Image (cartoon, rainbow, N blue to C red; front, side, top):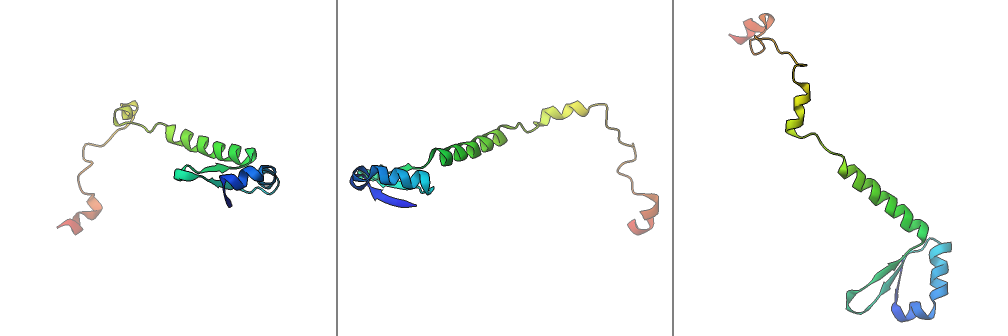
Length: 94
């Protein structure tokens, strides 16, 4: 990663563009007022964009909401004595 000021970049633009594309270098252009910019190759940008899109898609996957659980209605059965201790364990419960 290289950091250069705007004037240096302007005077050597071709050289820095070649470093970015040929050597996969990232160039940070420092400017007055903290208005810095980054130069990176199109391949690096596209790769970064794909990663961000994948993250956005992952976040967009809808999680089931509590009211959506109703789709199990009538498919789940629970015994009336569900909360009662098992016969095998009664001696340990006393």
